[in-house]
Image (cartoon, rainbow, N blue to C red; front, top):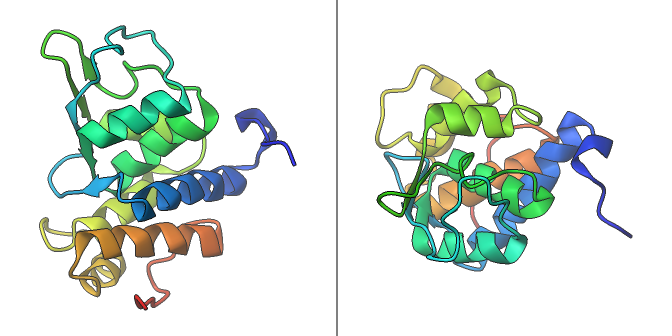
Length: 174
């Protein structure tokens, strides 16, 4: 079955496809989860143009060089799965050769799939051990996974299972 294009999917289908791509990448130990930023690291040398649209292979190179939070993982997976974001969308600073996606960049890049509230819940679940949360259910969800990689996997699996992030559903790592 051919992959559907971004425009042909519902918002829920987009969320699930992005989360599936991110989960596959996390489980292959390519994405490194970290707190305190969305997508950060050095951009591969061949990708220095703000208007460049990275291929899935380019996104794999980026993932090997960068660390991500849950929102950053979703943003990079959207770029990889749907090949619709530019390097500027991913926060490329061509002068310093770094990527540093902002909150605004992740919100904008994921707006066709996630609402701002959904992204805030995802962020609060992932950052539960690092930041003050204004989403208690999401913070509780995240706090039940002390390991960042496990927390990221649980968030992504939750999105896949429900078509959106539902922080009131309990998960456990097996």
